[in-house]
Length: 252
Image 1 (cartoon, rainbow, N blue to C red):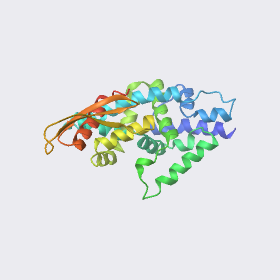
Image 2: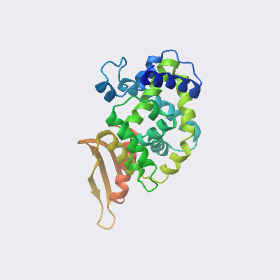
Image 3: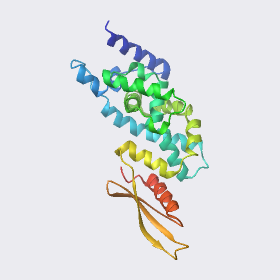
Image 4: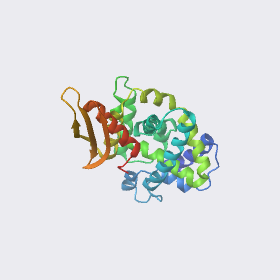
């Protein structure tokens, strides 16, 4: 048995034991574990890369995480639930979730991408690291693809239960950090993650005397307005614009 075959069998057994499921179609899970870089180095690999499953798993994760925090925090307003969810399913947290599921051991990736995973692990062990700057998209994408595979193989309810059980282990850490971050910081992280670019804020209107100006500010990405806000200072108006942008998600 080749090393690949051994890893495949070990991964399936691990997932069945960890998630308490009986896998019906193993191909879904092998595809979820296959990064596109691996196919470049292994032309005879019989499975597709995981990008389509990542797309599907992202949708399953969004609904499951929304339902989870909605039920867990019945008194929180939408303006707090939105950034809380954003923090719960961002690339850093998904990378940590991937590690908790041992995906770094089972994922099929190129030698170069393997080095990026090792670098990520090294950075996480540095206590002084700024976690907002540490991400590992290979792992984050793999965990979303895995959720997509579970959904296809087991149905939505099982996938939702699996995701909820995982999120329970991370929600306290995320909730504490969410309370420490403003909406501008959260929006900037989201835009950097999606577009590798910071959002742009612009004063649209200012009304009143110099000592008491009321501002209207818009925030945009790639020249597309994604939110507007008002306040008695530019800072407050920008914060409100960022909050509204996170609520409306017009970039989607």
